[in-house]
Image (cartoon, rainbow, N blue to C red; front, side, top):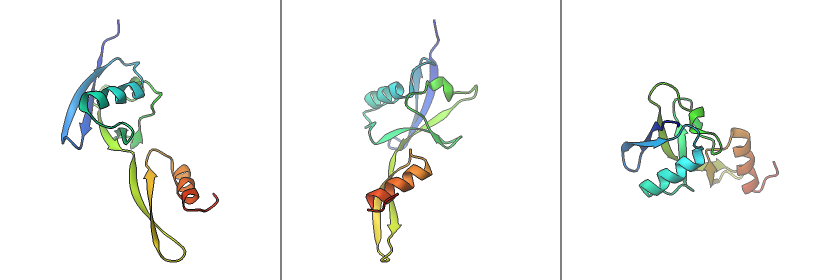
Length: 118
């Protein structure tokens, strides 16, 4: 029988770090759903981020992929943020950027939404 692993999650809206217990082979998407239900947090707007490596946890990966021997603190972070884009006519347009995308996909996404073919 596998032992549960402690997962520490900093939740900015609560200004506290909470401890959750999961099996090492639990997928990140299962963990985010459980955290969302137990903390009444909307998962469509936020997800788990690991500040030490500056990466978003991938939903289909087991949590054991991200855990080391030390105390890992993950952050519950908003996935979207506003980005102002300077247009050729010197005006600004605000776009909602998905921080979980890599830079190329993010820029293509912004360009397409602003009417440019990327």
